Image (cartoon, rainbow, N blue to C red):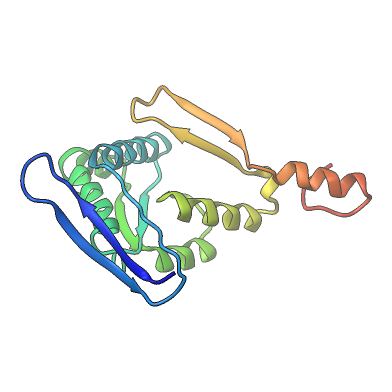
Length: 180
């Protein structure tokens, strides 16, 4: 119903900061996102290490033109870490790091022949990994890999639900893009 949506930050010291997000005149919906510098830093290190191990350039895509503070934080942290810790290592392998807007990166990926590491925030990665996998023939060939910055901890799994759904089609004699 009608009402005011607020975001409130209560610091350990100092005054409470309160932002009015929206004055609803009727029913609506809202979404909140958060991240920590520690988490973004770990993501950056994992991405840089993976690119170095594969000897591929690294691209981080965000929509920092719209999500200026949130996505801007990813962009700034990645750039700072690259400049301080990875730039010389990348240059020694003749690879690079670059930030791109998500729309530009999607267009680049569609016309590309591959050969790069694409660091995406969660939702973008979920959507774009399916697009890239289908471009190579099948979502059933895709895997999901989570890397920790220690370089030793890895979780890998098949794409959620894809193969099961294709198998059900196969059982009914229907064609799928997954090899039987």
